Image (tube, rainbow, N blue to C red):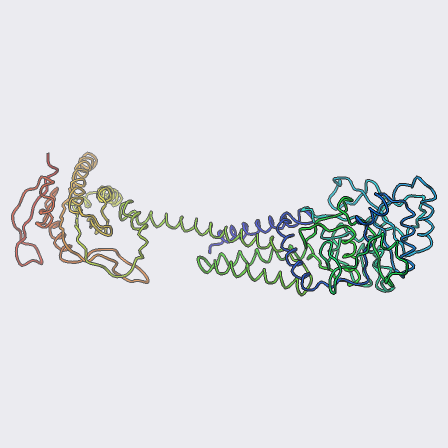
Length: 616
């Protein structure tokens, strides 16, 4: 491949790689999130169905229709939560999270005091903070709150018993990740509801915290993979609204059942989450594992187990993802320029499949989501470019070859040969054709009188007249023989009327030669004429020569020899044809017999005719 073509190929390939990288990095989820997300969801859903084992320490106390019917419509008096917490504490709960925003003071101060006293009494109780954000941040990746709804001041909750309950959804509306911590108005980080509750059962060296020096979130000494919004991927151990059974689902209890229990419940060491479990309370989100929405309290429960088990599915880092795109692009550039056709197709399919397998292995073995669509987008785009590029190169080469071949045969013949799709092979076949031999009479004396440059100019003008006449009537220029020409009609494309076409070409040469002769007489004081011989019949036509080096498309046989002998016997301006040609065109032209003549190579004289021109 030429240096210029290589540079062009590399430039296009790198442009595609840069474009793919831009699509990958333009947003947190990438431009093709609507493809990447569902593909990742499919893997996660398939795995969760086989390996779901919900932690039996996590319990959900539902604010459900049954509880609403018994206690009354929402919102409830704060004393209800106080009584509920007391019941749960008596049952040995290790941590209690109330997923109900209590931002406004109660109308009854005694109501708030009852809850405040219980929360102050038990340090393992977490109340929620709701952080509200503007519809659009000023800069990408910013998390500047518009308003933060803390527990009402009348509840006198200490900072260590508050955590945010925000759930962020991806662009397709699905909740796949939860922010483990979010900054408040002063930039101080508020831990997630799930983080605060998980920390109450995790050992001292396993707790989730933020490293202020690096800004990373850690679980013990292990880094939690988070994105620029502090989100960690939630592993789902349950499907939405799944009832507990022998192996799946968190245990679900109704608030009213807990309040009405006459003896402690089996909650020793449990993390208990209290929250809405009815659609009317509008705390539910689509998730990647089911078409049914999942209540927020269920999402928090799954995130708690994710933290407890330290089971994090992480996205590949952006630099590593960009490197994967570039490696795929550069490999594709090299291979698709080196190989074409079927080989390139097999390479394309192979690269596509191999990268898919690597992507799958990274997920199953390394718990890492590598970019899938973006490297394969680069692969497909470069493959398509290579096809287009090779096609354009082939068209250019075809046009070049057509241009060269077009100097030997007419354009219509070239087009038919190319459309036939037949290969050029060594050897020939027997065909019925007509041959013309043309020679310039008086050329040698003229060349002695003129300068060499003038001789070449005159010769080119005469040969140009011959070539145009041959091509005009679909003939094939076989070769130039000094100041003569050999042409054939009826090969390589067969024509039934090839004798007629040959004679018409000869008459055209003669008429144009007369015009050119007068021009030469006016310029140099000397003129020349054509002598033409035409014969029709069978001949072996094909490629003769060296298959690996050079082939000459020509005709051989007695038919060719007789045509050459007729030309050598033709007087200046005379068109001689054989009896074989005469029998095929005698009714089409003005032809006279000049008798029989003895020609070299023939034992008997042959009948010869002269073509005078077209019939009047």
